[in-house]
Length: 64
Image 1 (cartoon, helix red, strand yellow):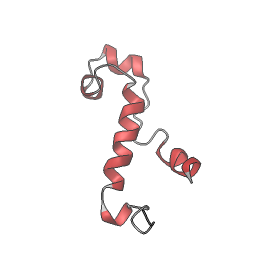
Image 2: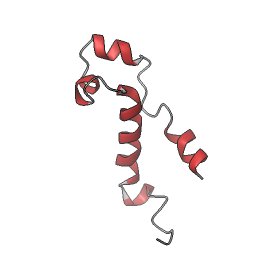
Image 3: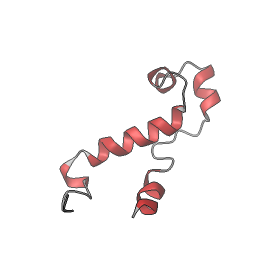
């Protein structure tokens, strides 16, 4: 299951530029993540935003 989730969120919302480009451009996401693993943090944060919505939370039916 972890591989399926990782595959689903890998490059989620990717704009086609690398970390260095975002940092050089002082892009909003580079500033947000303090130039540290910009795209990696962006992809994970986007995944959690999607999963926070009830209709997309694939974990909601699993037991704790």
